Length: 311
Image 1 (cartoon, rainbow, N blue to C red):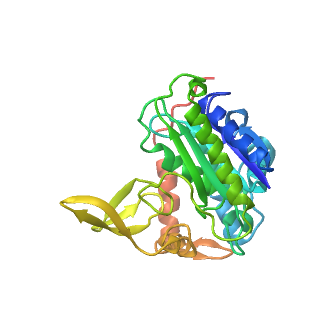
Image 2 (image 1 turned 90 degrees about the vertical axis):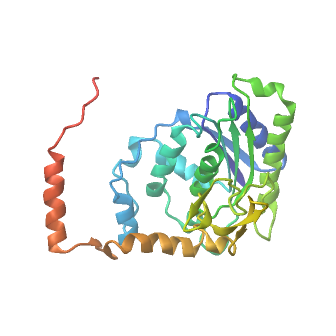
């Protein structure tokens, strides 16, 4: 079994040091480990061309508009595909993880297309954990997005084992003065190893509980008078005591969330209510719609050319 660490911060910075403590704990438990620093890899941003989705829907071999040898994304995706466990570590920038994590995730669809990645049955035990470091407590959007990056890279089954977030650590290497944080990262690695070495039963979560019992996120939105997890789309009703919301009574289990066959079917249905789709052909439009789209794109394509960079 192999655990891959994805470092999204500075070389040997606080988040990477904590990541190495977690990986060392996995190694001490007998697992194979490897470290990837995303800033060492060239990852072209997704352009939204939809070539990969067209390949998927038509049954063609998966391709991308970028040749596989034009950047390092395929190599990175292959390493993630080969891993049983993934630990993502990042500093907080502007309430969120660094953009390089999302650039990787946006390209992920074109590179991995296998039952192992998609989390299809028979059940495949693949787990994820996250380590976040913030200079202050301005990290409200940070962990939900970091957890989402990690679990999506493993195929959307939300097998989150653990997460830790450290505040008030702004200086490089400062985490080395915090033995409690180093020990917590070691425990996170042990939790990853424990769940990977289990031979039966569901993947269990070992970290601090959030509002949502599925993704352990605490960001919820109000929709149609109900509460909904911003990550899982898990719905429930607020529990109100003495005029205050003290909790949420959730509906069902993971099968009622985005990370299930129900979720995938809902995602596709949402798209195909607006446009007809036929396997092997893709989107099907009327002649009138084709004309409107062709003429409109041609017309607006001529308007206001973008300012190009000076190189």
